[in-house]
Length: 112
Length: 113
Image (cartoon, rainbow over all chains, first blue to last red; front, top):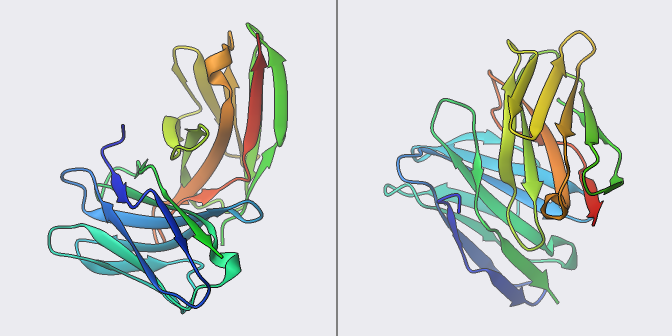
């Protein structure tokens, strides 16, 4: 158990819908990262937050957004969902230094 | 940006044999190289990491080597056991700028009892 929690574990929804994925980092970790894992794209970095502020962006679509709240939990919002958004979404957390990132168990999103 | 290539994509070994997985990276500014193990239905679990000021690191049956000149690093698992069966990912990260990990495409390791 990494100490990172993610909810829900599974999510099934329809195209065009909007969903919110939630992540609670390890106690004391200020950074939260979101990654998408799909069969054809592997593990892809989406976005990073540090202590409530966006720090880096990766291959995140404009339909996706995220935020980190004062209690350091983070939410990833996915809207206008398409079939191709079906994937595993992982959250990872780390202290500002060192570099080690600890991953949560993931949320499996299925868009029908 | 950084690009990480990982080989082989699948690896089958007999229990007790050694397994080696290799990765190359493109950006010489990368200085942190972790390895993750992902079991079915679970998130990636960090198993070992190495920083660019170190050439080799060992933790029991697992070791990682880094060749900065050639820009490649490898994972070595000795005395493999069936519970080592999983997908292994290498990754690379720069200390400055974007601090996210760039992952390799993964190696599915199967240890035959």
